[in-house]
Length: 506
Image 1 (cartoon, rainbow, N blue to C red):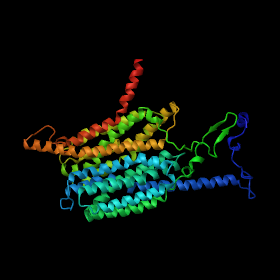
Image 2: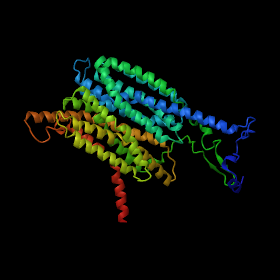
Image 3: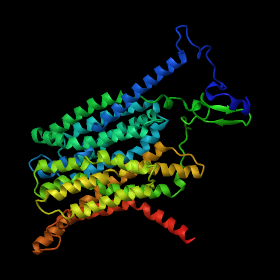
Image 4: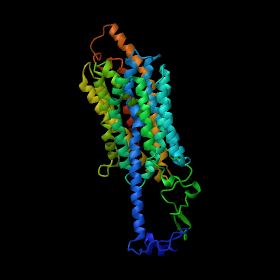
């Protein structure tokens, strides 16, 4: 078939080599209905139903995956303040459980995304079910814990690994089912559900801990996790494109159009080769963003863990008010993630990924320094303001990742290199995991240092200065660490400014 002939014939009428046309597939049937159009309509309707099920399943999964991790501050207050519980060991170490849980989930993602992208795509549902079993078993074991390290191992590590095993394969399937249209909307809906979970679960856990105590609460949560996860996993089938064997899906799909004159093959955009391209690691852009995400995440996890304890111990707020702060911390993320994603994709006022991340990072840092740091005893207004502003700007930071991925795609196109956005998304989550873990590990000695400094100041009768504010309490070093680490989440703008300055000087 010559190129001139191809230009005269509509694309849908071209005969594709290797495809056998069914006789009469485009004819009008005896009842006067275009059978091909009717079949296509049925396929679209079936695909729409499956997408709706996938979206519903992904939304439901946000509760068993993130409910405990995003609400751990309630457990932290319970563990540190309930002296009558049969828990032995250094209770200040319970502060690392929440950040460790988030960190392990995110750290596992690069490996699990790479594993289930193609090689084990057929086993995604089985893997998610195994993750459910591991998560439920971890919470059941933690309900019998008598030592602090038992909680760290079961809640911080084992349950987190189970949640990562649920999250990774199901998220890959979500992206594939919405590969061609409404992907941003689908991710936005799921991310909003995640923040809804973070806004409601603190009250659920507070009520259960008050009525039943920690052991029974953990067993109830294990049961809820099993029920919701199993239901949702069966609503998320693996996309058919991922079930095609490698030798059938590496550049020779039935949907390819071959140009015989030039002996060229155009690969279907929906197909991917077996090997994951790693050429983007040869450029410094990815490392700038990975470092930024790591630094931002190390500070973002601190308020999630210590805000309720701070509100109860320092500002003398009730447990209900302290729990409300954690809810207010998560509520703004419902809208802010979509807002920062809009800033990254806005066609009318184009902002680079570095600019958008800088806006999020700087605003978060100012919130920590001005609102949390200057909170005085009994002052709930500033704490509420901090919870909402920090939750908005820091919680929306992950919404900038779409712009980061777009920038890395443009860079790969400029170098004529391939890039796997699924693997790239996994790496960004891995950087966030490193940040969560490092922030949690740094939080314990910072809190001890702050307690020592506050006790020394009280013993010497020090007055004035910042003693009456958050900076003068045992949480002072944590506040400073939170502000500094989040502001460095926007350090990529310095590299862009450096490059612009070089071009202006030339």
